[in-house]
Length: 524
Image (cartoon, rainbow, N blue to C red; front, top):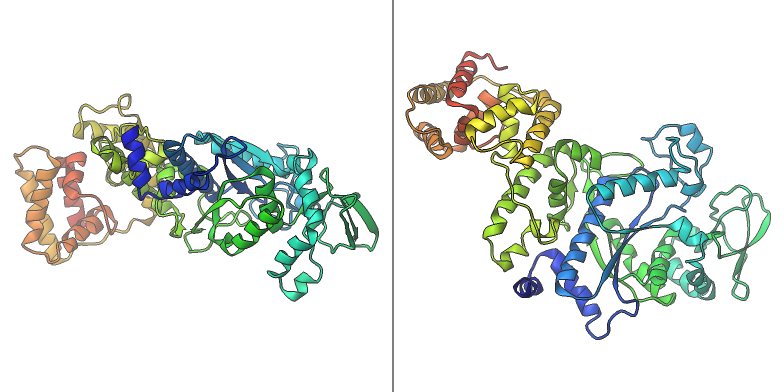
């Protein structure tokens, strides 16, 4: 453990770089609350998307890194702002008329359009927790509605009344003149309609902690700020929550980065210490547009898990968090294969290499052994040429390639075979485009076919790769043109696996038959 800790203290892996900032935060004095508090925030205005998962996954990676280099206990809170007023109607949920009838009410006061929970907020919170539990995260769930109504937020709300002018001064600097004229940090919940009101304050009373305002019909109301009668606007709420909970770390997307000084200053005004931050780049859909809960664009967690393992998604989230990521189905195969490459490398690495390996962070230092004897990309090509409709068919080829492998001893291989069949049929098959070979390519394919027909070597991937290479070397410069021809003529794709490995997996006789079909134009 000492070797690992020493390596972690020097590691350039981003979770350790962030964890060391937290160590420095308490190097002179331990936290009075007895632990370091990590928080992730969630706005349940729509169904949870994959970016929400990424935020918790990455925060957990930093938390694990911190626990290796520090002895201070930690907690992770997942905070849902479910008291937020529903301002937009998500496009991807049923009962749209029901939602329209409850516009501007707190999400936990809006009826559940799925008719499964007490409210829309409760439904989306349950979805979030189910997704997070799928990955085994250790976290505590906090509901803003409960937090406000139970009185846990009362003290910081009272401080917000006392420091109203100071907080307003911070906010007004960031607002356009038109918006500033009617802005208040407090959003009252209308006692009759239950709607969240965006109205200016007539009075903020620091003696009895009340606010006075006119509603949309001009009727005057006075409400206590405590007990769930009032919520804070979202920017002040950020800073107030940090102060109320004494949060030490929170990450958020790049779209929040310009607000960081506002969050920090409000936290300080309300008596808190600003937390450490980490800003990550946004997740984009296949068109390069930001993923949105209300639009429902981009990959969902369930969609990823239909075609690949939970660990592959965690691997994807680990990679380059400061770089914008396109979240579409075509990123899945690469993530699966790179994850298993790192798993295979881990046992032979020293401590310094291990703490820089993504799988250390995915599995909190205890990654399993990989039993993937065939890359996922190769399985997709196998599914393609074999017409496999189930993983049992795939295993017939896999066991010929790796006789000692089995569904029982190679669980991740078995899972991946099923995923590959599903992924191939849903995404690869509809986009396959075969073409006829050129004269030069036909000549090379014929020679490869003839050499395979008299092959008397072992069915070894590297030896077969050498054969494929020797056929193309005399004819193609650059050599990638030869391999591209193999993929486009025989597999209907512009890229593919190491072809020697593919022959070893698919079979020599089967590859000969495939080449014959390609030469005869029977694959298109």
